[in-house]
Image 1 (cartoon, rainbow, N blue to C red):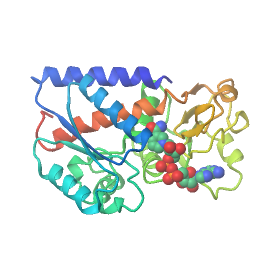
Image 2 (image 1 turned 30 degrees about the vertical axis):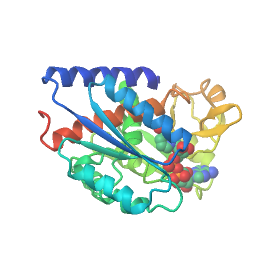
Image 3 (image 1 turned 180 degrees about the horizontal axis):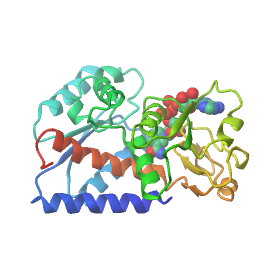
Image 4 (image 1 turned 120 degrees about the horizontal axis):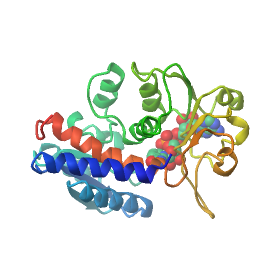
Length: 280
Ligand code: NAD
């Protein structure tokens, strides 16, 4: 399951939708605090892809020591600005910042990361809204590559607000209809839990936690975890060994990462629609 290829398809499709509508301005604003190198890289990529999708993007860059009040002021300004449709505060903020307090300032209809209380509530209640980019990206991969979900057993390893929990809810939703197990750091016998699954998703951040022994022959395996090692970026899945057993598998890198960006842009268009700034 090639995430780079599917990202390109999605971005091209967004560009087509926007130009067909007469190219109204659709704007994503990112807020980057501090000089963490991976965060800078992620944000840069988001802007490059936004331009390809025919969107406008703004990047508010703040020094690491700017202080909580100034970060909140910037987010408040973006929240009130009708020309901004999506707001993304790049996580993690430097140590000492109250991230929850910053998130709370993002209106649900501009919350392209799907992380606010309102967005999570909408997801649980099944009300239309914005869903986290990484979980949405996993769903797009499953759909695009024809992985059946209805009545299938899915195991999501990881229960974070960012990935594992929303993804579990999406997989169990009516219309997707998987039978979902949420595994986590206290799960007893992870190997056995995984071996029964038709779909295994690693969202932990522990290099090569998932081996060929965890995978039922033919199962679909999706790798969200990122570990930075001396050998480069490594996923939760031991790709070389698992690809011989799996029916479908994402590489790391080149799988879920590009899909997160594609779905951020998809969410930005959805946000513009929710705000009545783009035809439904
Ligand atoms: P997190 O640290 O908040 O959550 C990790 C989860 O893994 C926890 O729920 C924990 O219970 C579980 N866990 C830890 N050790 C375990 C073990 N031994 N067995 C089973 N479960 C275990 O992290 P997160 O924010 O959810 O991110 C997870 C990973 O995904 C990280 O590596 C992160 O860098 C990566 N990530 C990737 C993308 C992407 O686009 N590919 C996006 C976001 C996050």
